[in-house]
Image (cartoon, rainbow, N blue to C red; front, side):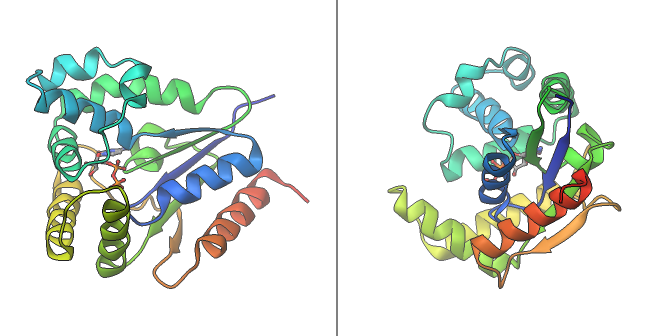
Length: 205
Ligand code: CDP
């Protein structure tokens, strides 16, 4: 078994997570949601920790706990993610995961550009801001969070601007990434598109 890395980047609530999980299951690859690393650091900072110390001491159990999917943690995650020292502390773990035997899917903001510039497949999954905010609003309501559509859109715009505008590893499509705009696509169609892309790069069929 050899390594095979699929890098999936894109803005908040574009469908990266869903597509990543589905393609990982389809090909039997391991999956890492790298947003959880920044969310876990954000959670610790909200609890009073120093960002650099928190990033340096992260353990897998920190990603498994609940409470990382709240709007408050998402905002704090994007704040700590602008810190170059925090990002640096998380690089080795992500690269190690990416090159494990048997294949790996990593989703985030900078996987195809910074973490795995040599990934075998790079996808940029995106959707319009309105569609993304509507999806996130539904998810948060289903998760029992008391939010309004206006708050969700405002939070998302703030986070997008911070993620795109930061000096270190900003959110940007890699020149060699395949763009999948899921605004008018069903989940099944988006997954099928990603699976087809990966299969063709692997030389399947
Ligand atoms: O699920 P959603 O797309 O809303 O967010 P996430 O992927 O969990 O990421 C939360 C925050 O972590 C983002 O807003 C980014 O600021 C940061 N992040 C990052 O900087 N680099 C990554 N590879 C992944 C996430």
